[in-house]
Image (tube, rainbow, N blue to C red; front, side, top):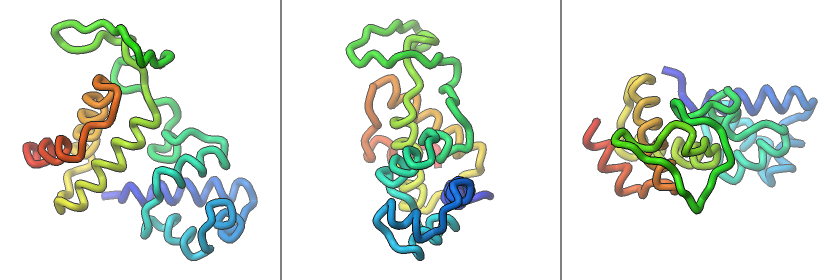
Length: 162
């Protein structure tokens, strides 16, 4: 199974090389040593949310691209529209209507990092398919709520499915 942190690190390395930068130069931008950049790129050390956001700006890519390798991946059938934090959005018996919620890259980033951290803490190693389904479900619940679920809530879901 491919380690998500290794995949993120490989994208960082590729983007750094596309810019013609060495690890030392990228380290200067992030305020870390060359060795730390090497550990990011191999997946040995996890990037913080702040570092991922900074890297996305430096490389002029989305945080979604850094995390998934894909641009603008919508959550299921939801269309990408301006996120209306005041509502209203349409809800039927199956949940929000497609197009009434918005893909939120920052929330997806926070969800992936929170769930991956809990996978490690709970010593869980789901298959890639199960991992994606769990992250997608938690993301959609968080998107519906307009904020990331609490660690306690995510942990409870992981125990139910684990």
